[in-house]
Length: 242
Image 1 (cartoon, rainbow, N blue to C red):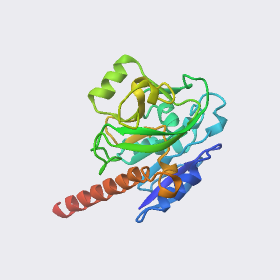
Image 2: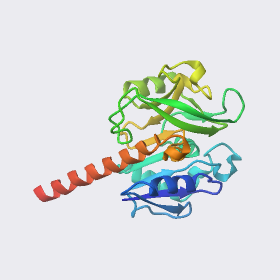
Image 3: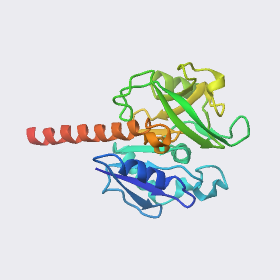
Image 4: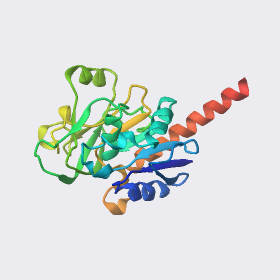
């Protein structure tokens, strides 16, 4: 099973993603340069963290116009799994593939820490095998990770169970003190209504090996693999019946 890791000028967590994914049995990851125009050979797409185009205009605002983003959007609309991590989350929002926006941290400071993220949805393609309410220990490293959306968008996100992760304390309580960047409603990660696009500010790629202090991030990649395998099996059975 092959995952594409998109490289933009300024990506700096692409190697982390490659190492994390290739460290999981059954998965293989390859770099795809942003000027490529097809992702047909891949089963899933990863937009990694970093500073695409130096974040000179606005985080993700220039990367959304890279040639590869047409293929990302086309494959996403066709149902392929897409995961955006940190800067990748920002790019997905700028491209309109996820609602809301990522703005400057409320502290106006860059935040680099390990946080607890409470799992709010346990039946998404990215969270199989993770009980609702469980905590994932994941690193964050961002200056513009504050998720913001208007009241109507927030209602829709909550009503449609699109909020996948919220920042929490070590007991799982959603409190302001556990919020590293001021995100509205402590939101750390969301998905689209169809649930095949997931963006989050914490880094699962940097928490996929116990030697790094946490292996919780690997649960997300394994869930993606499980989802793709299940979908492939269902598709094959449908072909046999037809």
